[in-house]
Image 1 (cartoon, rainbow, N blue to C red):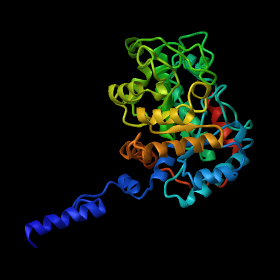
Image 2 (cartoon, one colour; image 1 turned 60 degrees about the vertical axis):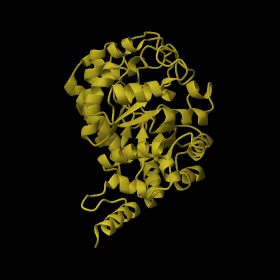
Image 3 (cartoon, rainbow, N blue to C red; image 1 turned 180 degrees about the vertical axis):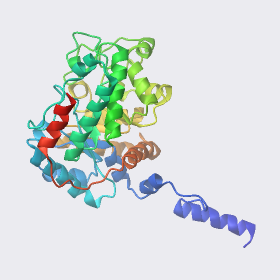
Length: 385
């Protein structure tokens, strides 16, 4: 074969297959190459559901909108067996999809605990911080992970790395490990590593720091007038250290920081998500939004426009916890933004690659769990304290 013919053959082969002869194809890229745009966009959303069992809307989110995962709340988790059945059902519906689900929950301990009442709660982060034991904090993370894995969860929105620096803060308080960067960093990272040691994805939150807010972002939009220098020397310290210690995912809060970005709250701000978190702190993992149905967003923005702005700013994974119509409105809005050129498909691919890589890293599957032993789970907590 002539050299020019060989060159043409190789170029054609690469264009048709995406493979370079002699080089192994990236398996994550292979998965992405097989996905339609709708499937990619679906992977970028974690949805909430209203029921204790999958209803018609949940089937639609999985089969038509291809959502990447679910977040479950106390309203969904009435008792251990029902909770197990719900999670198994979600996995069963998704079983024809080669990409497994994120099954996620807010299980911090203390007042933020979603597991059924028959499961003994872990103490608050503040009470763990007061003990100031790296070993205990690590064991807390491991125990949290074991409890969640027993139900089939694979992602936990914990630990909280906010520093409780404002006594009037209505939303953090004892959810924080303490009021200094040192205690929050040491205890928080130990909990994170404990979760990871049991193959549980840990989502650190609420970047760039919710500890000095006087407004609950569930209700309204907090404003924090700190400079970048102040953040770097205080609020960001636990996050920066957690990123160095291989944080899996970072949740970005809905907070307006006028000295950094006077226009957009952090969850919609390229200056905070891309410039600060991705570039300055060199975070390579999955960036996700706090719940887009919180008052901070819904009272100030159209949720579709907020979601588009968040993706444009660098968010990989959007959390849409409440109302089926909100979820579909967000997904359809992002698709429209791709079709009209407001968001490039390359930008979508960047996020989907990170999401698939995280799922692959933790070897997520949609395998069902047959039974759950409540007594054994409670013993884990009793033995720890």
